[in-house]
Structure formats: C-alpha cells, structure tokens
Image (cartoon, rainbow, N blue to C red; front, side, top):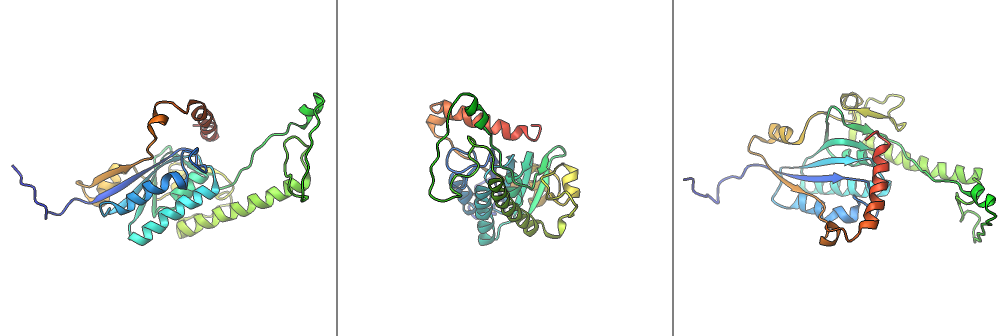
Length: 265
C-alpha cells in the first residue's frame, strides 16, 4: 500500500475554463465579464496551475464584454506568469475569436469554425407598417443626434454614416487586438479582416490558430501523462436550474440559436 507523502511533488495542474455561449452584458448573457470574473480569478489563483486552458464555443456578441474578458485573462496570465492555451470546439467567431486570441496558443478541431473578424449591427424598419395602419410616430429630442436609426422612421443617410463610423472604429480595435496577440503568425491576406470564416486547417494556414488539437492529448503532451485537469464553469442558481426563469431563458435561447445559425451550426 502506497503511503501518502505530503512532501511528494504533485503532478502539474491545468485549470480549464469553459467559455460557451453568446457574449453579452450583465447576467442575462451566457458570457460576460461580470459573470465570468470569479471563475477566471479562481482558475489563475487556486492550486498554482502550470497553465490555464480555455474551452471556447462562442459565436460572439458584445465587443466590450469580449474585450473585458480577454483583458482579465491577459492581466492574470502576465501577473501570475501562467501560459494560456485555447481549444476551439464548434466555433470561435467574432467575439468568440477575440477570447481565443487572449491565449498564447490556439488549437482547433478539423471542423471548427474560426474567424469572422468584423462587426455587425442589425435592426428592422417598421415605418411603412405604421403608415399602412394609420399610426403616427411622435419623437421629441433635445440634440439633433439623439434619435438615431429609429426603426419606426425612414432610414436617414446621416444616421447610417454615423453608425458606419462607430462600426469601423470597433472593427479597427478588433483588428489591433488580433494583430497584437497573433503577431507574425498571421498571414495577412486580403480577406483576413473582412469577417470571413475559416474551417480547421484553413484557420491554421491563415495564422489564426496554431494547429489541430484537443484538450486532453495536448495537455498530456505538454505537461506529462499525469497532468491534472481542474475544470471551472459558470454555476447557475437553483432557481435557474429548475426553470424559474423559463420565459427569459427561452428568449435567450432563441437569440443564442440565431447567433450560432449564422455559421451553419
């Protein structure tokens, strides 16, 4: 019988963070800095991990929340001098790729969807519907730019131009983040930053990923066969688990399904 030796060296520990879902502000979104902060902090601080692994499955969402989450991961990685590895499952697109780029190395499955380095804003126009039904829209503002892209009024060129300036600035921030994190590994082709997506080995060829690989075999290859994996994921309350928020969860589920559907998933 082997005796327990408190002085024996423990096998390397890898903290595994599950980042799955749409990125959105507050507690309503699957992924937000507010929701993930405690989990991320624990992953880097508990048990002296040799590395932190990110399991990513996200079609994106809020650029600000993506930036906040990514910045938190980088700050702790540098503060603790801990390498970070990202493993993409179905998709790491748009904000999902922003999170992946926070890692030092990115690995994908042969069928993973990666990229979509762009920014999107979608809405609807209902002014003709109102007119057909004799409904008058009344809006009063202080400040000529206060009412922008009102869906109940005809689209204005000035509003579209203003929105495009906002989207372009966010897009440039996204590009700068990817260039900073991926550096010389990127193959800056004409469509790299157009919002295009790549599958598996194509993403590797573009420099958006470092290779094909899965969590367990890659971590064993890097840290030994006896590597320990400690998994962290967002905990839902008892009420959430037993359906006390069915209406809100159903709406969130529809929105999340629509986000994944953009990538054929």
